[in-house]
Image 1: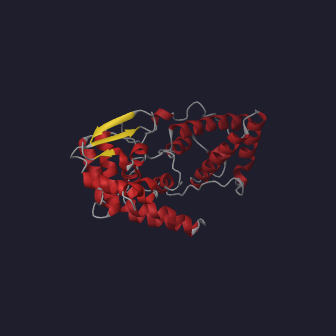
Image 2: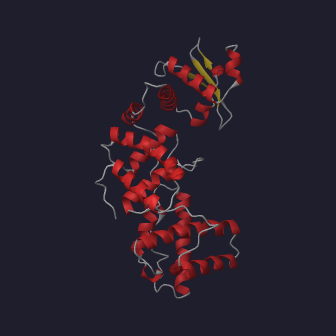
Length: 317
């Protein structure tokens, strides 16, 4: 396994080199690099140029307003962070499977294909079969990169290390993967692919660190996040305002991005919204902790980006 002595810049350069050698398209690498550039600056400023998964989760929250492992519509952010973590920890790049073109390796084909056929015969839904197949591709890659050319070489330590490599995925994904591994071992033992059944000894979900932002942040943690924002440019001012609204009022991100100019009562210094999740009205004081000029700029920016007709109408242009 790789060590953590290298800087994040060095890790990413080595990671990109390996991705190129594995045939990743330049456009794909550039999409991830868009995330990595900001992450490098963040780690240089706050973590001495080193990468940790904790650094990754704080960066994702402060930059994108989401928790590591949450649904990522662009499929770039979570993947970019986990690529670094996998590469730093295991020295390998776990590829995203492409079921329509990828086949299992010769060494594992009989076991994995037979296992999937067994699941079909057991009336497992077709959609679930595709999901399980995708996860078997990742397992196969991990085993081959660990020097295990035959399934009968796999020890419990290898399986538990594989489960640990899923840190950052949701508990649901990890739990489902463990379920697959248990069924796989029972099938493998019953069909002569392995002599030991490790299904009852695989590490449990609760033993996997859950790298998610705490429900409540300490004041110094809030201050640390706010200091990472560059307020010398328009986007930074907007981001700072978003973070202030979240940390000061506890607003959901969906409510922040749903703000309209009419929600702000400048005279009485109030913010009035209808919460997106609950549908209930909410009134908040526009305190000095949220500078009015920054909030106004953020709303201006959001409306221009979203091409809001209401904002233009309010200013008659």
